[in-house]
Image 1 (tube, protein in one colour):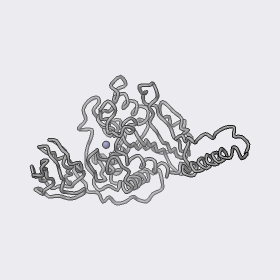
Image 2 (image 1 turned 120 degrees about the vertical axis):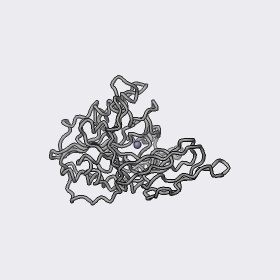
Image 3 (image 1 turned 120 degrees about the horizontal axis):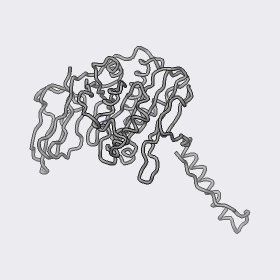
Image 4 (image 1 turned 60 degrees about the vertical axis):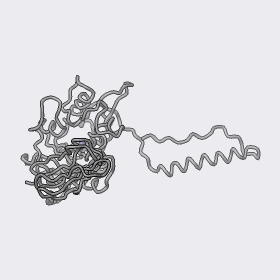
Length: 369
Ligand SMILES: [Zn+2]
């Protein structure tokens, strides 16, 4: 980050009674300069180099580096770069990737990546951690889930070097960064108008993936194969594309959009440290016993009419078949519908934005194993 300070007036005359007010102004400017320094504290100067691809061989062992990886160019021909933090251990080991905010309004993952990398001592680290604190750079700047071409980047892998805006972006993300990692953790939150429990989506049939999933301090783990639902060509999630490329990957959903939530951030960092410990990269104990509720599947319930929706159950609440979960009212406050749970389950996520047209999401229901 560049820090700009006020430029002092030049060529002050000598101190005489006639120019005394100017001396006062000089003192005032000096005071402002000192105050700005005091307020800004130890602001970092961004000196991170711009590179066209991640090249871990060029990074000295036992160091932490900041990089800008150029992905595309914007309408002015300027590079659009993704920030990458690399902690390369003094000893060899796996390369672990952690990505945040492929949906531009899902922000809790950003400080998880920052704090995880900041807390690692490269000299004691075995292997390398590659943190991307902000994948969807244009989306983050706009405060929006999607890419500027209105596509969902996380439904658009592997991308295409000759394709649309989002396809070219995804192709570059994967080829320049993701393909260099051995394991991947993709951080998300709920979307606008909804909230999430801290939950993990992972293919529990894969023993390595299952181990990484159970190490997260999650409320819920949804056993979700991912690749089986993939289409051909663009249309895959980052998790699917990583898995199909031989990179074990789990998705970690950390709370709510548009905000930093300290409890979610702390849990995210802890889960990642648990995983790095299990991979032998940092010292750790045996890892915590998972307290997560494991679901064999999950799905959303939707309204069948428009109106103002109140969801009557909470996150992580276990609900029974037939239990009231939502009430839909018309603008006069009259009840249009009551919605009930179709089967027993647990609330993974829910709508918090009352205004719904037909087909609005009510809640994300997990069905226990
Ligand atoms: Zn997301």
